[in-house]
Amino acid sequence: MRQFLGILSLLLVISLLLPTIPVYASPDGVVIGTTNSSSGVGEYANFQRRAFQTADRFWAFYYNYGNLEYTSSTDGISWATNTTIKAIPDGRSFGIWYDGTYVHYVTSNPLVMSYYIYYRRGTPNADGSITWSAAEQQVQAYLDERMFKKVNVVTDSQGYPWIAYIIAANGSPRPWVIKASTNDGTWTTASGFPYNISPDPPGDYCIAIPLTDSKMYIYNPNQGRLYDGGWGSLETIPGSASYDWYGSGISIGDDVYVSYTEGGVFKFNKRTYGVGWGSEQTIATHPSGLGCVGSVLTKSIGGRIYSSWQYTEGGQGKIAYKRYLDGAWDDTETVWSVEPEEVKLLDAPGTFYEESSQKKIGAIFVTGGASPPFNVRFVSFEPPPPPTPPDPPPPGYYGMAQVLTFVWIGIVILSVVGLLSQGMPLVSVVMIGGIMAIFGSVGVQIIIRAIENLR
View (cartoon, rainbow, N blue to C red):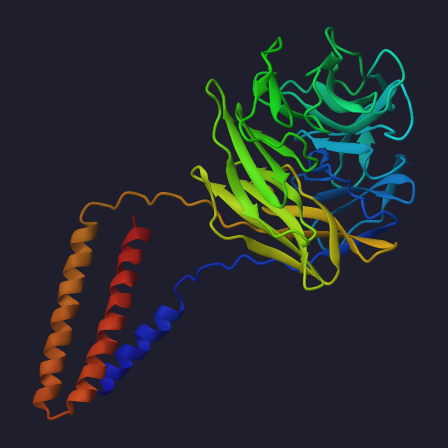
């Protein structure tokens, strides 16, 4: 009996040493600065992007008391002192893009008439500074003075910058895009630009979404147009909101993914290259009155897609997400952060880098009450790794498992019979037999894993 109990104890210790399933968690948002505007990270403009990741840092940009500022962090918890880039009128007037090497920003003043949008490119450094490639560039976005709104910048696969924006023409928004013929940090407008995507004003924003081989897709609510060395026809997007401020768009390869909001319902559609737009899907639905702001799409280098959004419930600000996998969204949302204050606006990086040290998705957002100052916060979470198919078993793998299982069953049966013959009570015998069966299965798994490690 002592030998039997010793074996059971050994198996118990070994089972405790087996690998455990990782838990993916995140702290509440870290305050990285303050702002005098509840729209310090934008307003109705998820597509403008305010944050990104390099291999060694998180970077966050926001409006603060009349200036565009940035800060960075190696761990998402301790943040550098803010650096001022330039004066801007509000949080709606700038957009950020990181192409894997350079950070690009674009600014405009949506409150006054102007000829120009302003563009600059720089290299984010490991010490948290930015080395600018050239002085800020003036981009003449129209032939006469207009109000340029909702500016956002991206680069194509060759590094040429594109700027998408809205022109307020007689009170009606018109979607436009302009491209540079230079990719060195200076700006010379390419031939054929600026270009009016559509004469009709279906929505109050316009998003440039880069594809492969210098292709670009321009998404304007309810419609879009492909550029592939020339412009394709105007496409109508099934179900897309005709007028929606909370838009977001990304691409994987040449496929386009967009999200938009209609009355508290976060919706989604996909354009498959060479096929066209599919059927509209619902990401999530939140009752009105929760202060919801439309979803922000985020992709990983490995091709996973996440939709994150914010809402206020019970006096607390919450940030939630769902994952898009195998053509469908998760059934239930995951709340990744609960804040002590109302969440005003949210922005998430367009891409997180699985090969970086962080392997996290980060978001920058504003919290606070009815009046300034407001807190600018950052939060991140580590998504679960993508499922990987198991390696094929070695020859004889299943045979070994079956042999060990039958041997152990035989041992259990012989032990039960032996204990009964010794006059042990039936209840005690059943309990011991059950324990032996449980730890026997553990022992079989240990041996199988050992065989795997020896392959």
